Length: 419
Image 1: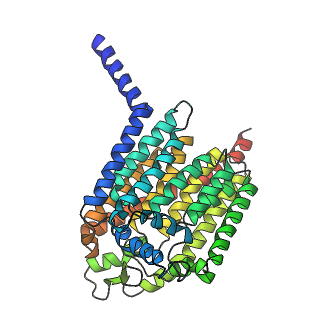
Image 2: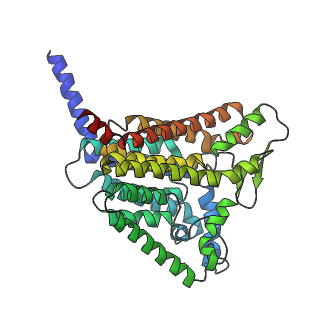
Image 3: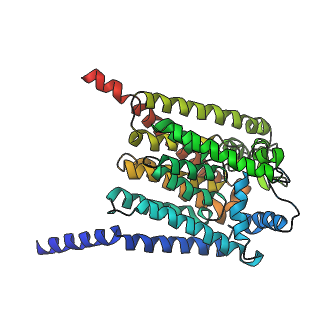
């Protein structure tokens, strides 16, 4: 019995040690140092966009040759240039290290908001450990793309959405003008929050100010060029819809190939129906987002609380953007962190399943990119299967989130029926 008591005491000590802020911050440092090392040293050129494409854009702007989004249409909203320029501040030789430092500092700020200042609750400890595990499973892509800058904005925005909707709207709007996807989280707050008027006012006012500054800088219609640039892209090989054509290549189809686009620097599917599928993804995304909106509005009108509705609704919006997307880049997996973290903070037991699924998506993403990405480029059956599994897991996440949003709008009726 003493031995059992000693084991229980040891287990309790271990739980206390792992649950403390010191352990969490130590793990944060360890995970981010590992990811930084992988970005700088791992095979597959994981920081290729930063040291190649982002560097070129920043260099051209610094010399006054070409300002993307102002002098020419750009694939990103205008604020995306800010972190790229900041990473170039210490010169071309240190752009990779500067970029990693920027992302790690932003992650640290979001992590501190997640932990909070009050006594550290069990849900927040769980969410913090999950995020660190998710980052480790996702690998270098978690830090090495522009999306990594937006994720801390999204996490902080969602965590503050309930009590500080104006701050949340500000952070998420800034995030959306770096990379569009956080705009979906703004929509989720507008639906789930009772202070939606404040959120809409902040989002529109800040957006108008950003557009105004862009116009004063001479952007003209290029301020909205990212919309046309995205719409004109082909079907990228990582896109969920591309799985259909990749399996045709595996089966030996001669009229389906993978080709590199010099215009947007990505590998795309070329074959019968691929262009039509790429063209359909944008309206499909719009229709899907409207369907999620309708479900969210239904739930809100039937009395679903912010705590019950916000996280699954945010997850539904994010997964729709991932599945109905002609690009499907591996860094899109980073988007899952924000709604899952919110779900684990608000309803940890309810969000156990999507947290595990999102972690599996992260692991599959790292296996495919960057280390063995070349196998996907030649449509190796094993890697096409891994991509198919990733798409299936995203589909499962979407189904789960839609079911929970629907249930959130059905409980009031059920309560009346049993009263």
